[in-house]
Image 1: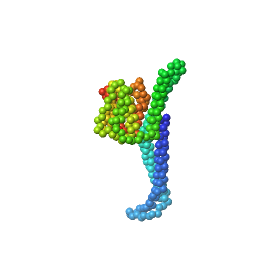
Image 2: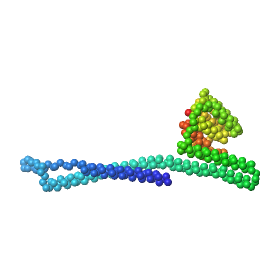
Image 3: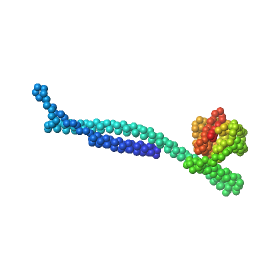
Length: 322
């Protein structure tokens, strides 16, 4: 499909170029033939005896034929030379245009192909992620009908429904952000020290190790989209609790927030894709792989920065919010 698109771009460009060159060449030939000046009459010189000569502007019958033949030959040769030059120039231009068009068409088609491939992967992963909770719900419904032991199966069903609902909401948020139909949350003054402390406390029961928060900024009040900031913070804390081993360190600097956790080092090839949708460095962990993609999208929307570093058994996310 994309090869056909590339070929179509090349054919259209070359056709337009050829038409322009042909029209230009024909115009030049017509202009040259129309406005070519007539040659001046030849001066007939007759030598006489004793070295004397006489001149006359009257041209006899043979001279007229010679003159006409000369004019025709001159025009024919001139047209042939002009045509040869135009053909050489046209072929050179066509060759250059073809090379440039081929190169540019590859550059033009590449992002479209990449977007199409990502869309296919996105749909496949979304279908897979939704298929799992639906299968669990179906199995629990069947068990519920057979065993009558309602409480356990009901809890499983509720858990999977919550999981599926969150996945659908995440997909909807990403789709809306892609189309620009959802904007940033309203900006308001926020004491970052207070809100970060609150959310760290919320995540402490979810983590078996220790979560610490340190403040290195003197003034922690900022005016920014609060809900967007808190969503990115929650995503980073949730990711740290999933992949952290014994320690999570949250640090607030003047214009950035760092969330670091110990554990396995993220490989370089994984770091390059860590913010991709549905990408997970460890497939056995709970989650859909959409959290960091949403955090990245929110940061781009608000012109914030976010990146990941992983060295010495420590993975660090740096969230620059100014």
